[in-house]
Amino acid sequence: MLRKLLFNPQIALSQQKKLKCTRYFAIKAAAPKILELQQVHIEEAIKLEPTLSIYTKQVWRRAHETFLNHGLATVNFLRIVTANPAVLRRTPERIISSLEIWRACQFGETLLHLLLTKYPELLDVSDSHQLLSHVGFLKSRVSTNKNVWKLLMNSPNLLAQSEKTIEEKLDYIIDVMRIEVPELVKSAGLSMAFEELRCRHQFLVRLGLFKPRALKADPDEPTTNHRLYQITDTSEKTFATKICHVTLPEYEAFKDLHAREIERKTRKRREEEDFSDEEE
Image (cartoon, rainbow, N blue to C red; front, side, top):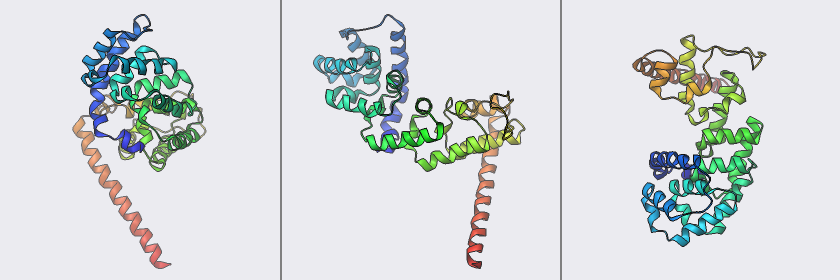
């Protein structure tokens, strides 16, 4: 269910519009605090998301009151319904149920409101057992609820990834790249496909631009390595030209060669395993 939710094409197509809405209401948030929902707020929201025009003032006020009663300010409410219009037509009971599902993750009210305001589609999650199981798994790897929250703020699509997929990337980042959890949770590294993560890291290693820390090194000791977010939270062009100081075609050529190298190694390993099985 979570995979369907976060990989929904309609959600993906709405991200650009959502960013525009978030920026608009971020400006509003900098102004004096809005307590009441006024007609002008509704009209501004409809300009940003025309599908909201079908709802009556009563529906707007009912939903607004529900969110307000649960600690979400008017500006947060406007950001949420503009980015996820379906929320507006839900009953108060369903909205409250969605909030309670997320409260069970124990991020704290302030952090939870920030997460749901940034990613209103998360209010579509309805399977509390699956959500808590996923959050519990993430906590087992990054130690605290706040670190889980940081991961989701940077990589909400973690909810759509299997534990095996996440584990593979976590093991690589922590055991191979030797990056500590505090740095990990500040990046969107876990949003990246494992193959791309490994390829970028190996490119830096072969250029002599990344050297893993010694096993017993002090985590606070300065390093010349780029931070994880600089490696993963960038476009291919930026990664190539700004981080690696090469051209994009050069990095693309390495990607092709690296993929073939991994394919050869994988094929050789399988052949060796098959040969070993035959001997037994």
